[in-house]
Image: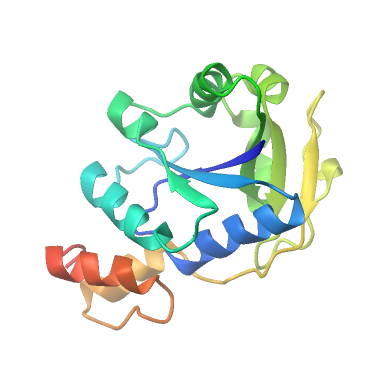
Length: 194
């Protein structure tokens, strides 16, 4: 099978995450996409605002209706800083017969050379770069990394961020247009981001 992995804080999950996963699924003919919430992302200085349990629950609610999607608790259960190469090693071991892809936004191509053990990571996974608003179409030239296998995907380029959503929620502004409804229901029930 062709399995894509989409990592991130998902603090909170939003429609941009789901659109990127669906676009990667369609654009690269993936069989499944596994969402992998980080315990602590290495390139983000601040910790997630919601607990790992809440972020997992929101993600599971958000993807429940799409049979192509699933959620892994590997990184949050492991704890600490979540390096993609460690996660790729784990899935390379647990899914040895599958072809593994790591889904990133085109905006991450410029930072890819800073990723921990990027040489090893390019050996373990292929990358799918989904276009992001303001970053144009992704291209291999955007990330001069030896051995990089990259599939560019045009995508729908949903212009929203978790940071913006947290700010809206803090001010009790509506977020329903930018988030999966089941995730909105969950965070409202738990009083998250207020």
